[in-house]
Image 1 (cartoon, one colour):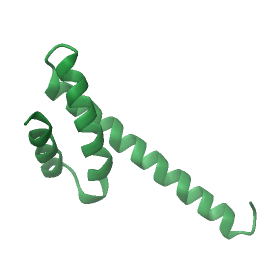
Image 2 (cartoon, helix red, strand yellow):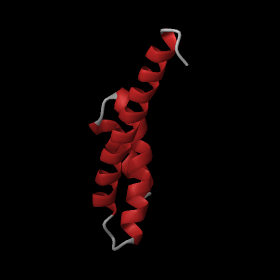
Image 3 (spheres, rainbow, N blue to C red):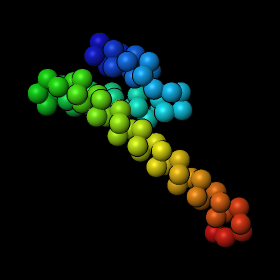
Image 4 (cartoon, helix red, strand yellow):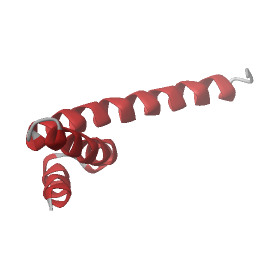
Length: 74
């Protein structure tokens, strides 16, 4: 039930492009926060932020690799 409410909150508070990293991070962070002292909401918020950060970093890396490969370099 906690994971479902966190996922619903994450969907409502983020844009579609950012939702993937946020939802995954919020679920993991919510569960970890719950078991680390009943701070599920705080863990979900932190997990969402971290998930969005990781998703953006991975997207930047893919774009950079695409640019390098597009110029004929490997």
